[in-house]
Length: 484
Image 1 (spheres, rainbow, N blue to C red):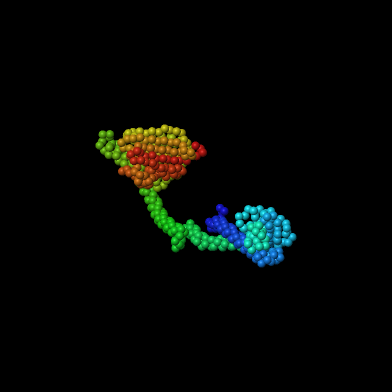
Image 2: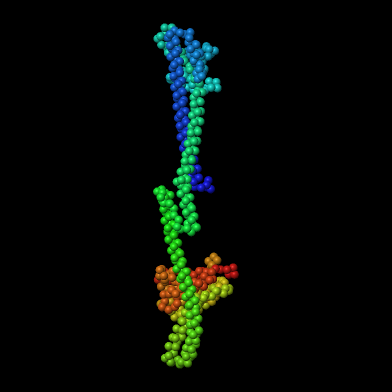
């Protein structure tokens, strides 16, 4: 039944319930009607018995005793089986519609019934292979009878009438057949009506909704379901249409955002090309200027007041050169040269490059090396760790701790670089990897963006966790290869 559709599950379940209800009701009604038929037939037996009794009394009162036996024999008809009169003293048959049994003893069953009954009543029993109704009615010895028979006995005799139950059985059979046919037809009619009603009220609306959903699934968000019904399916249609409208609005918003993003990407690509071209144009003259200033610096004496100015110029030239290099790296990223490398040596190299700056700023650096070999570009990874560590030192202007940790997690290498700086506000943490985003007065804001691109080019991820007043942790995850 699990493979059937909702319609047939509902119809079969409801039909089974109707079958039980109609069956129980029909069975109860059948039993009730059978009782009425049996009660009617018992009442008919009482009337027949009463008529026979009255006829016998009349014959006796008129003094026509010779007609008594003929009267009993004439009573045998289609449904009256036997009529007899027996003496209640010795239980011998004194008159009968069957002359051959006169003088014989009445049946033991009749004797027992006569002795136990409180009053004349109709009862059923087997007589041979037939089921018959019987009634035992005493004939009192009334005053008119006493003129001929004396007053020694209160009861002159007991009338025993046996009536066939064939008519009763036939009526019950007919009733059972009619009830069965009626029940089956009722069940079929209810099942057919239920099928039609289910199709009109449930199946068709649901199938229509499924077709509409299929169109929505295929990308047509302009379709809607009829909302005119006021029942649960109508409310479902309203909810579905509302959902499709929200989906359509969301789709339009996504489409608009996609167009804007593509436009932004195109602008960034153009800006990258422009930045690369400008960087190339600036790099060579900048190198020449740096060389010329270094020559001038060498010719100045140590106590010359211009020496400090020249040194500042060289420092600014170095900052400009770094900016140009960052622009070139961002605009035209270089594919990593993957070789086996010990990640601890890369981290230690990065620490050595920032150690002097860290000591000047009273930042303590902690790192416990652990040999882990991965395939990576050591120069690019050095740039990643160096960018993160420089940002960490900048976030601790009054000193603090910089901690680097590495460990294996399943099939990944995890490197965590944490600081105890002032942290990143929650509303800005999502922007730290965006190009040109920076909170410092100096720098291009490309360091972390470049670092993220490098890590992703290695098949890894770069994430950040931060809490104001506690510090920031950058998490680098890179895949471990079979060679590790």
